[in-house]
Image 1 (cartoon, helix red, strand yellow):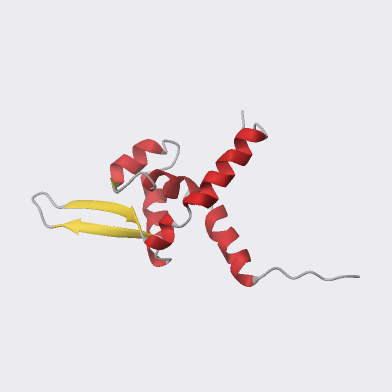
Image 2 (cartoon, rainbow, N blue to C red; image 1 turned 60 degrees about the horizontal axis):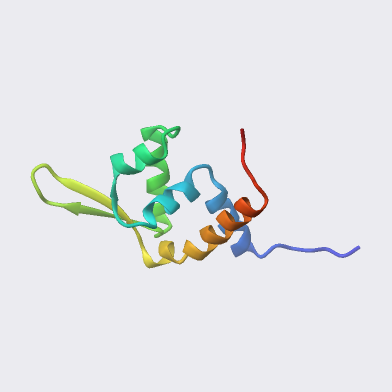
Length: 106
């Protein structure tokens, strides 16, 4: 019997991108920097607590960068790093696949 082992990097990438909300957060940031509330308002079913947790994870993976502007009041924006922006073709391909096969959950 042939044994097939997944590349650990591919496996980890699927775990990271397959985690609920991560793909949608990245897709939201593809259009440019956003404030926390802008992201939250775009992905309505996600709680702010979950968004904060996911943002910390994506920051730790250097996919998202948090920018703090010392204004009054302090302004914080999130944007994709180069690593994160490199996911654009992956997300585009997934969207095309979903459209082609009419993938939707009703």
